[in-house]
Image (cartoon, rainbow, N blue to C red; front, side):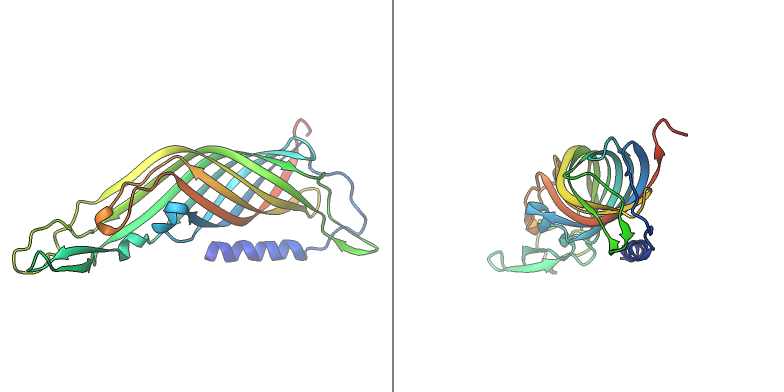
Length: 254
């Protein structure tokens, strides 16, 4: 939450900056920039059975190929911690095989991380122009856009401390120290994203945008049916957040 608070503070500072007194011309066409972002990352479909909302943060290099089109190279990281598996229960027969009771794994630990590298394309539905503060007062000119992209999603789902649900009943009750060996589902998988957003240029170098995206990842998590979790495939997430960017200059110009 600290990263989100810092970025929200920066955006509020950015919005409160005085705008030029004369309406500015031009835009960002042909410019290269850098940026950073923080998102709320929501698992959806089968993945939401395993994890809750998490933060996603990252950075990108952006190139405005024209007033309406942009290419981005993005890196982001996200950590889902803890997983719902830590609170899961399993059935075990105590004393009487026909009598089943629910038990938890007191030392269960589960979290998942993502490190992803993507290439995104943005198509703006209107030309991006610099916001101004003329005689009529401040004017924020937002440019809505479609965003789409894809790349590599590296993930690692770590699990440890699960009590072994298949242990025999030796008349002394369940042995909570008898646990499954720690394991991790990890891979580098293809995925893609698509969504919508809007960008505002504060001047010819500074801008910010808000966007929401659906992420579809061709990856899986193994089933743990004794604990109530079926195979998760594919992985799907929705993210909503904000980014800030700084345009360094026009390609080919000194």
